[in-house]
Length: 93
Image (tube, rainbow, N blue to C red; front, side):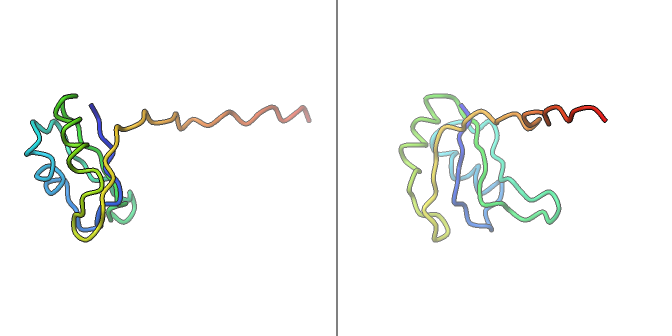
């Protein structure tokens, strides 16, 4: 299961995120999302774990204060397609 982790401190790293979730089970991946141009954290990330471990981690960590911020942990929603809805017709010239 993929978890969304929001309201992270901008100092949180991938390894910090991994360490935070590790007590609840095997972490398959932990990634803080960074700005493509600046490399700075965007304040959220994703963690992948087995379903039962993810459920335990969600219950234990959602709302918990980390680095002075109450983090949000929810099941990640599938990413919307970024192709857009098409430009529509422009008519003929």
